[in-house]
Image (cartoon, rainbow, N blue to C red; front, side, top):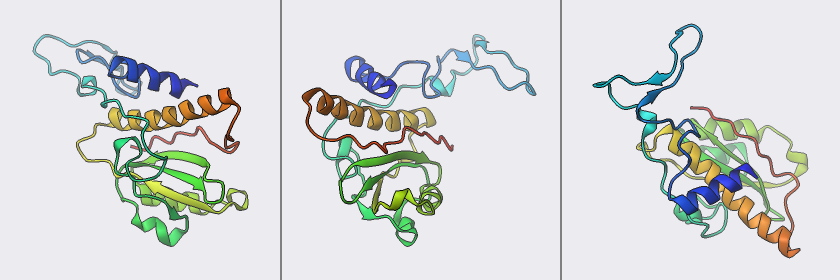
Amino acid sequence: MESYLLYRYQQERGESTLCNFGRFHPRYRKSTNRKENLRGGKLEAGQKDNPTGSLSHLPLSATGTPGQPGWMGLLWSGYEMFAPEKTITAPAGTGPYLLGDAGSQEICYIGQSGNCVKRLLYHANKSWDGKELQFSFHGVEKTVLPHQFKEQKMISLGIISSSTVKRRSSGSGTVCSEFFFHWNFIL
């Protein structure tokens, strides 16, 4: 539900909430860990703006089919059968990915990683209750900031949640009971 509400907020306001996904006010700094012992606070005049205070990711639209090229206006790879030898087609860099049931076409997992190949290989070694899975990924451009990358993932979940809410309210369709809301922010 949180992802759906954040998605709706972004659609209505044209940007994400300011202090979410690692995004922070441009004229403030975050507190550091205990070892560095630096408290958060307002930046002094003349100090550079906080880089995590930059703009949010532009709103993405609920167009297309999850995992297919053009979903949300992004260049997804299209589905491939999920096998360890096939995961090498994914980018070694940062990107979101999803796993879907090849039979029912339901989304079973959405994830993101700093290394998609490595993360997909990890998932390939799981049983997934004997389901035959397929995967799709979107290679993120290097110009996307970490907080914008996290926004993309939450937006994709929000779009799927939006369609799930509509299906539940109309009484038609099925919702994948195995849809995991696990987020592995490996940056």
